[in-house]
Length: 235
Image (cartoon, rainbow, N blue to C red; front, side):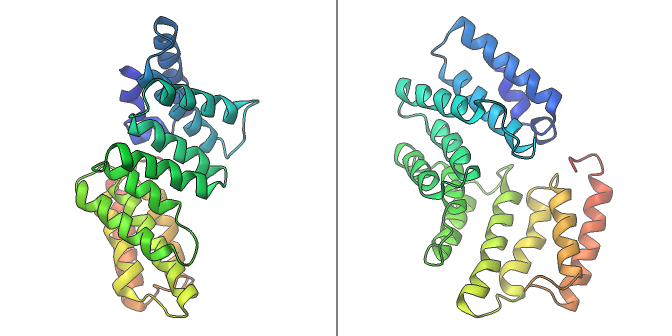
């Protein structure tokens, strides 16, 4: 489906014109077959991306539309793991972490080998007691799909979780934890140069618990390398 071809390319999935084109393609498919589950889920994800990349500036009824599309998709095919994942995405971005975790767990229930479901679950495990579980779930996602296009995002989530564990436990995670994940991001999701630059700036400024002279030097080198290599990435 051409709409999914757009969403599966990071640079296109964050571009407003491309998102509008993808949504139009999904809506055309739904006119031909209102029960097309792939089109329902695709339209929901496109609307979710539009909401995200509009700075969480919701169009009238947009969140309700997304939830209705996903509810219909799940009614038609309750074994569609991707529908649960997209549902979890919209729950998470609207600050409903518990519901987001339940959606990810439903995806795992219908497909225990779906790596993205474990990553989605990790992103919704935010309480101090859940942070170690979040790392375990990210590790499971990486194990299931070691060459996944979302690898950099997963490493980012793992590194961020290490950041949180330090203040919660009263210990600094040190370079063996979060810093290693930030460096590994570069090999996992090279098109996330914006995130790499931002975190590189954070480390160089000393605001990260991962910061050290050695880490700062390494991040400086990696950020420049990434920026040069992927200058056309979404910023």
